[in-house]
Length: 149
Image 1: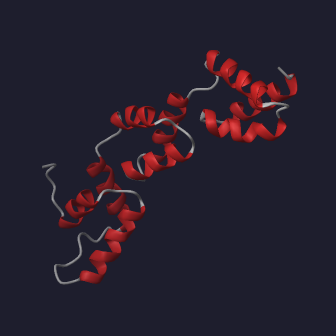
Image 2 (image 1 turned 30 degrees about the vertical axis):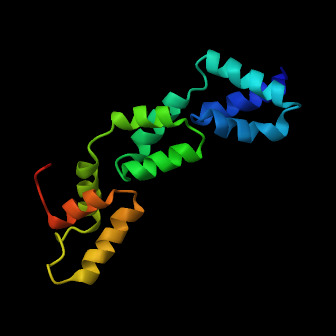
């Protein structure tokens, strides 16, 4: 295993956590072979320096309060985190409805749009949809329900 590649990996991991696939993409141009890179990644994972579970938990804790479950899952899958790890990490997250209400209240402090104001309702719905909240959650937030039914 080339020490230069290992040092590069450790420098990257010292700054933040990486998913295995994400770190592999960053290191691939500097590796002499795919086997060398795979061996390094296995070694880092065995030493608990590289963990998809920890990466997912860190990513969710930093982004989870501002986006919905769908957006979190999409971002994690995009970084190469396995579906079972994504599901497990999302299981421990605060209720999506609570998070959506908090995000919505920060952006639209005036309350739900009036019943006849379809344009404003659509604007607020697009904002929440862009954050990755489900259609059902958006509907409940915009109706102003305070119960979690």
